[in-house]
Image 1 (cartoon, rainbow, N blue to C red):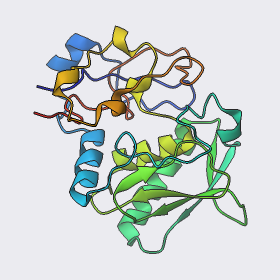
Image 2: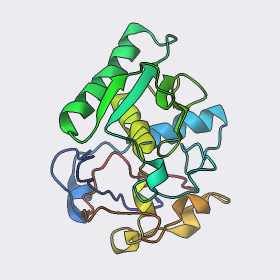
Image 3: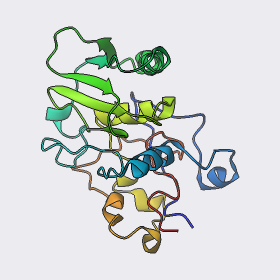
Image 4: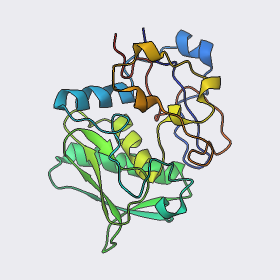
Length: 224
């Protein structure tokens, strides 16, 4: 049995909705593959024995476990400089570039640009697993797309963290849309299902649609 019913939010400008919004019934009658983006991230990181906050978040003192959309100090400007490490082969480099080019088309409020001499920038690199910090850190900022993480969905997910978004189940109103089966969560992993109030997490006034790239799958951190 899974831990939670899938839940998502569409973000006004930062819109990562796959198809039309889904409701509970649509979810269980749909053709969505059971192994989603977050499931793959958790699988890769678990095999490596790494234990990031909520599965793939590198905590930073400045982040304070809050949504960067609320904290003005963690917001990016219109242009977001990036570097793709030379350790990636041509195909993986192009995959990352394709994701960023698509963002530039779909999200007119921001623009990913190749870094010049900016002090604050994103560095896509192959480290231990799949992870990112949340929001702008103010210096070189690692987005790890490690072995097994080289998929469009994973790159989108980790980039969204860097833009300032936490996981969907953290919303203050999540209990109106999902059921957390606490007894099925692995011992010691319950904190990954914390929720935060409106001073910490903003929904931007958007509704749940059950198809965002940022939500947990139904068996995330499940003991069985």
